[in-house]
Image (cartoon, rainbow, N blue to C red; front, side):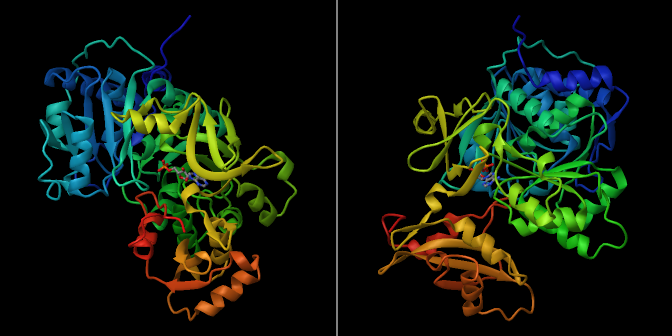
Length: 511
Ligand code: AMP
């Protein structure tokens, strides 16, 4: 028997088995009227009401609905109501400027655009056939409570969401994720993380980013409670963990750092100690950070690796039984790797050192960009653009973004390794290591460093510190101090932006 796997399966199960449980706690502090606490029955009713609203607007199956929103119950509901009725949701990064959003709305051909009230004025010029401000306006037009939506002849290969990824190319590309992609990712991710009906999940990750890595589907399917967080702040995260008994969250290493900083000033026992697990991805977190999650917070550290193009879960690294007797510092080294392949994923590294993946979580393609799709998926393998290797435990180690490898004096230097070393200095709060063109060495390892307030760290100190830890050729030849480093919404360094001024006038980005 073949029964189409769709996102509806997750909410349907929650409504069937946990109808009276609190499914979603909306952010209380937001510009739109908060939806408060909703049971899973109410979430499912609102998702159906939204589908009925789209019927009334005449939005057909396969047509696009774009949403620019901070984390909210309405966005979670749209991930079910829009996709689950056969339309395609296009969640857009709320940090983008009007021009970028206009491009995405136009490129995706969205007929409906939902806009966070806080962004209404800034996005005044972004037009769409149905442009609705989120809150009373969008609820009034989109929600038809009690109206049965038109049935959808479900197709697991239909596109459920288009997630535009930015950061490495001039224009973002629209990643088409199918219901089957999302289903596979959610069930395997949920399984690997042991998600169950006692979990309380905190939305520390932007929901627009690869649909919050799909964790919201997994948690709904098990009947766990989801707590919305609109603005990421370390102290607020600790408060919500305490208030709601949060057991699970996901985030970039930057989020972990915020929580660690907040914990240093927290009065009393750290909320969630011994019960909370955090899943980290987006960049390889420094081992010092991993260790502190265990020693300073008492939380369980987990790492995953993946991309928007892979829904995202490709590899996972959890504390294994074999590591129980290790010291936190030793365990942190083990956990510093991207991880072993998630079930159903095959990982490989090609001759050029690029990490390749094969799995049911790999996207259908880039929306309306067949050439880009053909470059990314070759002979059944998805090319991640990341450089790395597979170690003796069959764990993947990401050593660099492929384009970020610095070749200095003919030797390859993994900038991540240099960053990790520099980051271990107690005065360093942020660091990016890039290659800059150099007559003698080809490329010069250069460190851009942000230090703690009042620090008197000098260029020579940083170089001497690194020399204690790494081979000479890997150490920065040049150090520049900055007040901040360009990052994407999810905390990833935008290295191409940091490199730009150094490479101006060069036709190639390697030297
Ligand atoms: P995105 O599509 O925006 O989620 O970004 C995906 C990229 O983030 C990957 O191609 C990697 O470069 C990076 N990334 C994600 N997880 C990890 C990780 N655990 N370690 C190193 N890099 C990561």
